[in-house]
Image (cartoon, rainbow, N blue to C red; front, side, top):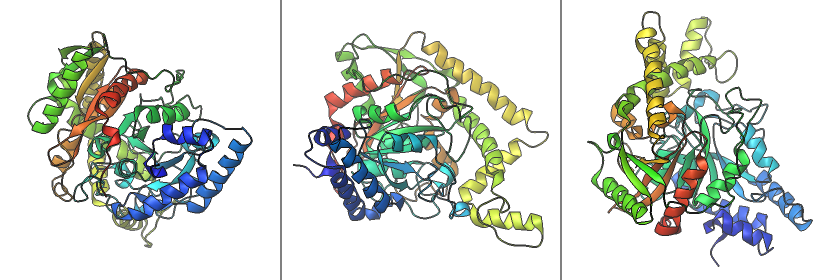
Length: 485
């Protein structure tokens, strides 16, 4: 019998149903694993006392035949920008290091109502700004497959925790690739749902028109089980879509025969690592053999996605982070002069990457530059969205690399922000258009680092992506492999 932390959600749920194991045993196994692999830096906060108490309550419910959901008794980790009542919420920043939220995020509440066991908060790039998880104010996350490499970001802690078998499920947020890119680099499944599919209420904002909450898991079925719980309309979130969410875990079959899959030429140019290209081509050949109809397509405005994203995202950062001024809440560096107090508080509380983005965003929103930069970027965003609309007239799913390269060495890009920003070149357009994107592990480099393919679908068609992912899961069996820690 394998250790409990090594099992998938599907396996754990089956064993719980058969009363072969208890939720308390699962939770204890996960905490032991977290302790054994503490050097990875995946967690900023763990709550063993409350997690074991919740596991006991879950076991009592099952004994009475009162199971709340398929995830009742299953451990989940939250990215540290999800509000919780029983743990600090710091967004990996010093400026709110002592913040204790007076309310919970909608997704947190839904998980508790479903009986899921929240183990703790995972590490992240500060305020979700970064692509390597080296911008946390507290500690760096290391990739479980090679601890000298980054796990990706900003949800690197959530991705690495699942890859390292510390927890079977986790939640992250994705503003420009922050779920999909670390999922690819850590060899797990990571989904950015359609914008508005999952509530953002109670999530510390980065860029409000781009942020979306999404799940990490080791298999598509596990991913679907978590999405079943968190998806759906939320009246507390003004950006939540009033579109009924299906049961994603129902009839999750590997359907690819007759499926129209588009391969956009814009994602296969210069800068794409050779091994990544090779694995993508092998994945495409596999789909063809299974009966999928693969055709070349074009998303012509993709070349503007990087600049468009960083104009819109930083402008929204400038607005959203204005509240952290040392007056309303959070840290404060005292000074008798109000402006100096605010400046000193922000200088000490925000890291270099956050400050860089605030300055850039403030510039593009300033008088005389608004129309030239922010206004024009919004127009290009519309063109990018129309590109996807046009392609989805002839394709059911788009397939691209998730990241142009595998996980890179720690410290290799921190002194070159533009090189770091290019890590998300394959994922940014998905957020600008609001469509769903799913990173699927499809193989490894010669150095043993995971490689991911990105599946992109029409708005609210996450189920189609999960079915293609299930095909890869059954034919490649990447999730059966685990890092040797």
